[in-house]
Image (cartoon, rainbow, N blue to C red; front, side):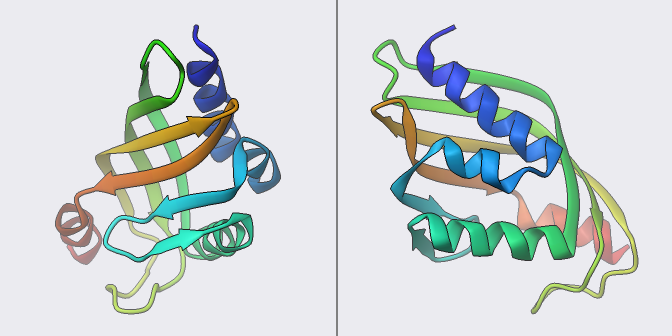
Length: 134
């Protein structure tokens, strides 16, 4: 396993454990977080605030994970299935009633000095909305 793959493995294990501090330990101080359907957030403080918000609104576990990395360890990606429960209504989205959802997603990363410097996350928002609105 390349260093990038090991870094992503630790990051996603921390995600599944709900351990924001362990996720942050894998990031650079100036991490650029490209949120699906959202603005770019820069820095660990904004990443933590995003994680806190997500923890309030959603309970998610990523399964069927496949991690890819380039040879020099500067770029990596992961494809996975998001298995979740919608806990609390998120602004501008359907009302939360404990709905469950399952959809494919992916994350694309840049790494610098063994830490993640960019996180770009993708999932199909229309698919998610259709599942929780049903």
